Image 1: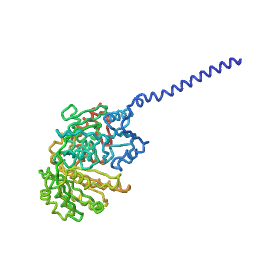
Image 2: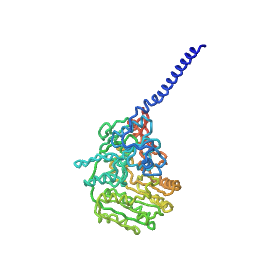
Image 3: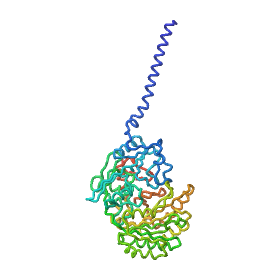
Image 4: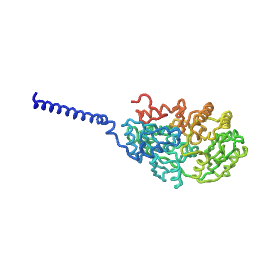
Length: 500
C-alpha cells in the first residue's frame, strides 16, 4: 500500500471521527434544551424581593412566629411580593416548576402551615397599601398590613377595624380564618366586614369576588375557610367603625383564691343575651406561673365595656366580690390604648423565637361545674409554668348570622377555649404537648371542633373540626377555583368529587 493511499485513508477516518464528535456535541447540547423547553426556559420569571438559601437573611426569613413549627422547614425560594403582578408571577412560576406553594402574610400560623420544605413561599407581608373612604366608612387594604398598623392608621381618623389583639398578625390571614377579637360581640367577625376580595387564582388570573357577583361562592368560602386554600388574596375591602372610648377592666387573682368560683361567675355573666357591650378574656395560667417575674396575675378577667367605669364596677360586682382580687383596674381609655392593654396583659413570649403548642375548642352551651373542675385541677397540678387556658366569649353579633351564611361554622357557640403551652428547653416539647392534648381530650364531652386559626395536627377529622357542616360546600368551591389542588398544605381543603 503506497504512502499516498495510506494518507488518504487516514484523512477519511479523521473526517469521519470529527463528524461523530460534531454530531455528539450537537446531541449533548440539545438534551437540556429539550428538557428545559417547557419546564424551565419558558417559566415566568420571579419578581419582587427574592430570597434564596444563598442569601444571608434566608435562615431568619424562612421562620414563622412559632420557631418550633417552622425551624425544620426550608423553602426553595421566598418571594416577598410588592404588588399583584409579583403574586401572579410567583404562582405561575411554581406551577411551571411543579413546586408546591405556601402563602404567608403575618407568619402567625401556629403550626407553620404557611411555609414548608422545597416550596415557593409567597410572602405578601410587604404589601401594605391602605385606601380609606370616610364617607362610606370603608377601607381597601392590601394583605400585608397587620393589626397594629391598621389600628394605628385608622385611629388617626377616629376609626377602627374588627381585628384581633395580637399586633403582628396579618389582616388577610385573620379575616380568611374568620377573625375573633374585641368587637366580636358588637360587630361580628373580621370576615363579616368583608365587602369584596381580589384573589390571584391557580390560573394566575385575578378574581374579584363580592357577595352579589358571579364569584359570591368564593367570597362565602373565604369568610372563614380561605387561609391558603383557594388562592392568594391581594386586596380586601372592609367596613370600618367609629373608635370610641371604652372602660378597660383587669381583675386578677392568685391561685390561693376560689378559682372555680371565678370561672363560674365569668361564664354566667357572658351567657347573658344583653351583654353585647362587653368583651373579655378569662386568662388562666398554671399554678407554677411566675406572677411576680411577669408582673401579671395568674388568673384574670380583663376586657372592655362600652360604658362608664362606674357602670362597669356595678355590673362586675359579682366578680369583684369573689375572694380577694390582687388587682382591680377599671378606667376609661382610648380605643387604641385598650387594644394595647389586651396584648400586654395576656401575651407571654419569653424569647424572640418561641416554641409552643396551641389548640382550641368551642363550647356550644354553658360549661358545667365538672368541666370547670377538670380545668382547675389540670392547671393546679401542672409543673409547666407557661401552660395556659384562655376563654373568649362568643354570642352577640356573631350569632346574628346563620352558620351556613359563611364558611365560619361555629356562630352558635357560647365560648371559645384556647389551650397554649410554651417551653424553654428543647426536651420539654413532648411532655407539654401531651399535657395540653390531655386536657383538651378530657374536655371533649363538653366541647366541639376547633378554630382554624388555632390549627392542631392531632385532630382526627380536621375538616369537620374546623368547618362543621360546611365542609362539602367548601370542597365544591375548591373544585371550581382550584381543581388541580395547587394551593394545598398539611390541613388544607381538598377538591370535591367530580373535579376535572
